[in-house]
Amino acid sequence: MADEFPFEISPMFEGERIRKDGMHVELGGPKSKGFELVRAAEMSEVEDNKFTLIGPDLADMEEGSRYPLAMIYKIAGELVEADLESIVERRNHEFQNYIQGFMHLNQRDDVWMRVSKDAVAKGMTSFESVAKAIMMLFKNELPFIEAVEAIYITDEAEIDKQIDDVRAVYKGRDERTRDLHDEDVDTFYGCTLCASFAPTNVCVVTPDRISLCGAINWFDGRAAAKVDPEGPQFAIPKGDVIDAVSGEYTGVNEAAKRLSSGEYDRIKLHSFFEYPHTSCGCFEVVGFYIPEVDGIGWVDRDFAGTAPNGLQFSTMAGQTGGGKQVVGFLGIGVNYFRSPKFIESDGGWERVVWMPKMLKDKVLNDIPEEIRDKIATEEEAADVESLRTFLKDKEHPILERWVEEEEEAPEEEETTETAPQAGFAPQMQMPTNFMPSMPMMGGSGSGGVKIILKNAKVSIDKVIIKKQD
Image (tube, rainbow, N blue to C red; front, side, top):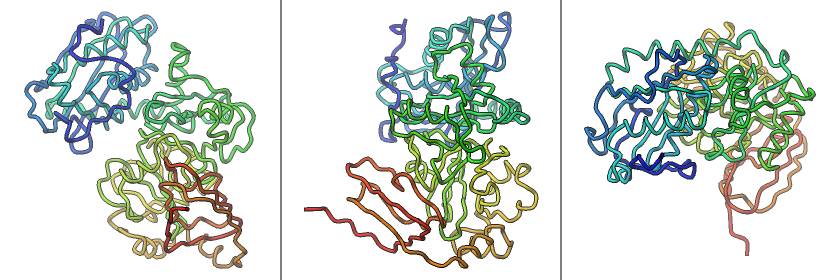
């Protein structure tokens, strides 16, 4: 069936990156707008395989330019239900990446796509071919879908007209788990949809922890595992509780070890520092440790500025992603901020010291009232010194940790080092009693670095790396 399309369709193209010099057009992304939405409907409401385009087509787009793009799919079938919308929606990411010359990133109203010059030269001149390929894959790979219709929108005014209603749909999905918690269930759900980008990552979705991409909650995972038990969403028996506060369970550890090919054997779902959840690359927000104030900052992909640590979201995302446990950084979905177990073992909201204003405003009602005005944004703190001043002026709870550390007597450091690992950048002063269980920064080179810290603070002003003879 794929012969009818002017491009190749195969999982082998997942992970393909289209760089700017090879790009014909960019769609959505941080400098434009768009969304993807799947809606369940009755069979009588769906005209199977129908495609509608509102706005200019690919052939009408100027090379090297940027356009908005929204994608709406209406699905129907005897087994189709509203709980499956998020799952099918997330598969749009996977299936569009099957198309050679078409790159899809992110999710929901953060979608970002690129079409390559080569793909256009070979005949990809209309969104209709893309949409019909996706509809074919939906029905082939998800047999519960009996009919599907696609509407693509490249007209910015029309997207603006619909975006608030679309975000209301997302919000309604997220709120379904508000009164359900990890201790109320005996099964969590895993997702390996991003395996092509992060082969050692398994996203563990629980009532208190949404997927890193923010698109799949516990109910979505349950629905997907029910209708497609061999698919990328599957049940993970919770097993025995090892530590309820940090969120460590025997079943999750067993799944982590199996699905990461033994690279990781422990995951604490609600911990920032010790055996944190792996980070794929599709996460909505990156958390970063700020050693100078012993606090944690958070930055989302919509923030184009620089965080107080001197880094932008893209830089931290590049360090954090790939399915690794990286001490000092953590990827999450925005809805995790609303969880009562939000980084519970590391102080929760009392450990948060900085967020971009737009992100803070988005979750403002979920921040404990007594700390709302004590969390800085880019308007109050652009660097570490201004952040420190702000925290002192506001009497942030983090100050109690500073007092505790000052009162503790320094103890002997015990370190063991081997050859430096490529990409290792030891610029972090870790909290007292912090013991990393893996290299502090991920890298792709050979060798490694092993650090054991016992009741120690480490501050390194300069590192000189020399090749061993």
